[in-house]
Length: 97
Image (cartoon, rainbow, N blue to C red):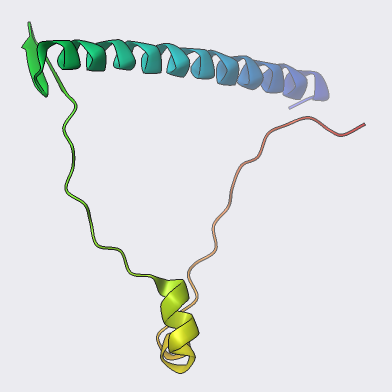
């Protein structure tokens, strides 16, 4: 790809990212409206036409406090700690000037 083509792709990527953010904000606003309707009707689930939406409280889950365990049992923590696989991460932004 030429530099001109790369710049065009970067601009397109940036535009799409902005559009996605705007749509996500709109989605969150609609979600809030639907939740308010559930609250107004004092229900936690609704079926409308082919759609179903709900706002149910989920069951609390048990979590393991690895930091506290590592502090209290450093040898056991070290014995059972393994290194995970590395991964790649795509970053996009502006060059600092």
